[in-house]
Length: 113
Image (cartoon, rainbow, N blue to C red; front, side, top):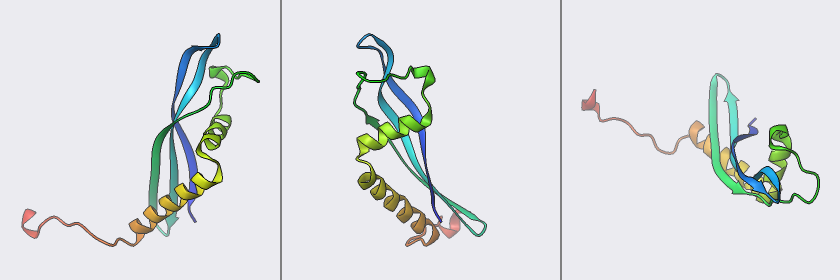
């Protein structure tokens, strides 16, 4: 079974936006997949940065009070929820399958040892 998780690497901010400090406008993220099969661990990830809509008209959370969960929700909204996420899951699963069942293998030439 493949386990998927989000890793938030960095947050791009405007130092001041509509008189509020450190407003997030961009999320640098990794969507990661891990599978353990017997004693072998397989890993794949997608890394990207996504601009988000800055809407400070409602409730505003100061930068220092942000947690992973709402930031991931902002990201999912910008990515289009399940359509993009299902596509990324499929891509990561395919990569892990290729690691488990490689179609090609690269070797050093036998004289290079």
